[in-house]
Amino acid sequence: MHSELVASRSADQRDSRESRNGTPQLDAVSLAIIQQLQEDGRRPYAAIGKAVGLSEAAVRQRVQKLLDQGVMQIVAVTDPLTVGFRRQAMVGINAEGDVESIAEALTDMSEVEYVVMTAGSFDILAEIVCEDDDHLLDVINKRIRALPGVRSTESFVYLKLKKQTYMWGTR
Image 1 (tube, helix red, strand yellow):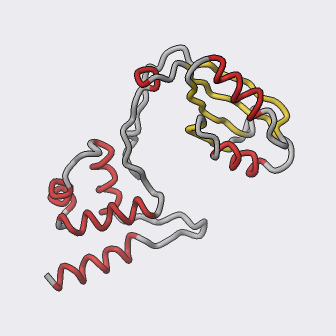
Image 2: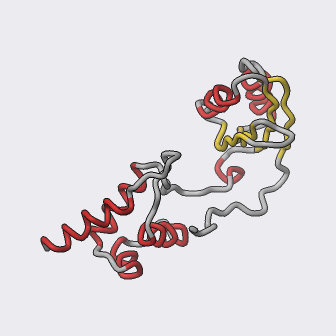
């Protein structure tokens, strides 16, 4: 038991190093755990442990650390249409000035589920999930366009969700 704890501690030290940009550098075992959970987010820790060569307790510790570091989330992924949200859209935003402050303000909006700063035609892309068209109009017109630095927006309303997956694996 003591040797397993020591091995687990040294493994935790290996899997928690940070790169120069502040993001965690993950070892092969942590990547394998993530891949197991991408395949099935409800997979038991004991089964994951068998697959990656760790005890159930060590897997539990690793998963908690990955969650605490913001490396991953374990959530139920739904089709918004099936749970009462009738309108989804991607909004391209052109900005002037500080793009980061706009992106941060977007992350605080409950309707915004995805925000990326981009290079190209738009400075920011934001995915929005709303109850209906009136709700979407309110979010875009009164809240996003009102943010300081937002120069213009272009909305891409989703007509039908055909694929939504988070199983891209690890590298």
